[in-house]
Structure formats: structure tokens, C-alpha cells
Length: 264
Image (cartoon, rainbow, N blue to C red; front, side, top):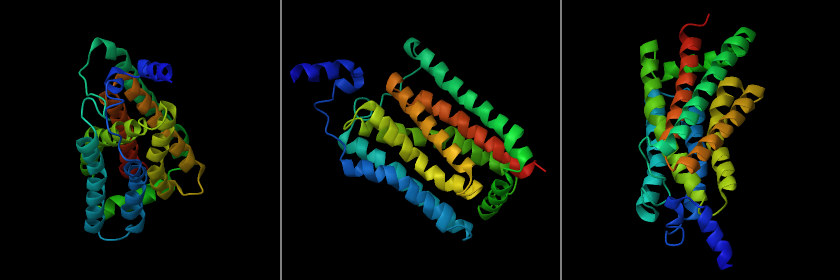
């Protein structure tokens, strides 16, 4: 039994193995709440409040997101430590990380190019974006976003800040929290499916719940979440996955910008 424990500790990264035995575990119930809360929040502000006053939608979004991102802060404060608890250390660009940083950035740009290619070569010419355009226009109108400049400001927030919050939440809090209870692959799969779940509601609204695109893109999001969790496990850092995530979010908003304001 001792040899098995020692073998496990030998395979753990230093930041994790050094506190594996001493660190108190985040309660399972908090992780379960963390997995389902984003989907519940998305349903409220994106589905249930659709068509209501923009102020009400924005209030629901702000309160929901604030509560969501408060969870990992509480977890770190009570059960973890920023550098040696659930969250991997945020490190600077060092030699041992350079290959992984390049990999993260390359993944982001490969997905960006694939998305733009699919949009311009397949979805737009075939009419596959018609419902998405109607829903996008209606959503922006309900939020008072009526110009390309305003949408670019929203895009900047999502690409630079919101992507970091999501990495902090999904990979820092949930993936690393699940790692306290199960092997890395299982934690990766569970956290990635949780990350996918709330996107199904958004994609279903734009493409329809009977559309193959809704589920193709949802599965793609789960795969992306898995790649980012793998990067976090390799680098002990949230920054590479944050950069990669931000690049892909930027691609989404570039497509939205073209579709809503420039596509005929």
C-alpha cells in the first residue's frame, strides 16, 4: 500500500504532490454546485429572460456571474492556497514552459482559422447562419448594443478578461478540485462536459436544438476544455490556456461582428 502511495506521489507535479496529503479537500458538494451553476445561470439570463427588459437581463447576468466566480475565491480562501492548493501557480514565461506556450497559442489560432473557414466556406453560403443572425440581432438590441464599436468593446472584455475568469473557474477551481478525488483523465472529462453544458443552451438558441451544428459545436467546446485542462496539468499555469481561450473567443466575436453588421 505504501509503495502504491509513493508511486502516485512520484507521478504528481511538485506543486500538487507536496500538499497532497496535508491539503484539505474541497467538499464534493461545492464541486457539484460549481459544475451545474453556470448552466442554471445561463438558462435564467439567456432563455428565461429573453424578451424582457435589457436592464433585467444585465442584472441577472451580473449577479449570476458574480456568484459563479465567487465560488472558487471562497474555495481557495478556505480549502486551498493560490500557489500550492487547488490552483496551479501562475508563472512567467520560462524556458521549460515555452513549448507549451507555443502549443497553446498554436491551438488557439488553428481553431480560429478552422472557425473562420467553416463560417465563410460552409455556414454562410448555405444559409446555416440565418437563425443565428436573427437571434444575434435580437440579443444585441435587447442589450442596447447597436454598433460595431460597441460589439468590439464587448468582444475585448470576453477575449481579454472573461476568458481568464473562465480558466480560473473551470480549470483552476473545478478541474483541480476534481483532481483531489479522481484521476486526471476523469477530472478532465467531467470538467470539460460541465464547461460544455451551458454552451449547449446558447448554441441551441442560435442554431436550434434540432440542428446538428448545436451538438457539433458543443462537442468541440468540450474538446477545447479538455485541451486546456491538459495544458494546465502540464504547465502548472493558467496563463497558456487563458491566452488560447482568448484567441478562440476573439474568433467567435469576429464572426458575430461580420454576421450581424456586414453579411448580406
